[in-house]
Length: 50
Image 1: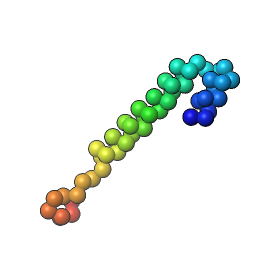
Image 2: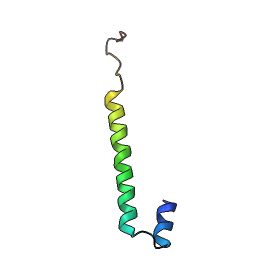
Image 3: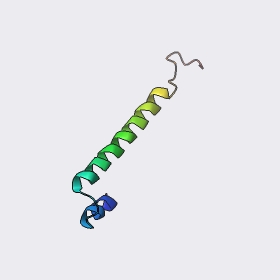
Image 4: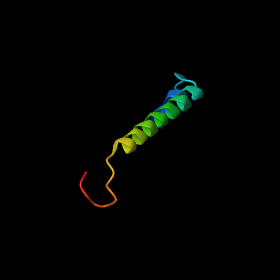
């Protein structure tokens, strides 16, 4: 957050660029977590090894 704010303060980026970067980063993290959850092995209900 601090780096993004300083980029706007220094005039190197527009605020919309910084917010867009934050949103894109959040989307990448969300997709990575979602993919990890889909691929994670689930325990079987009967307790048997898979």
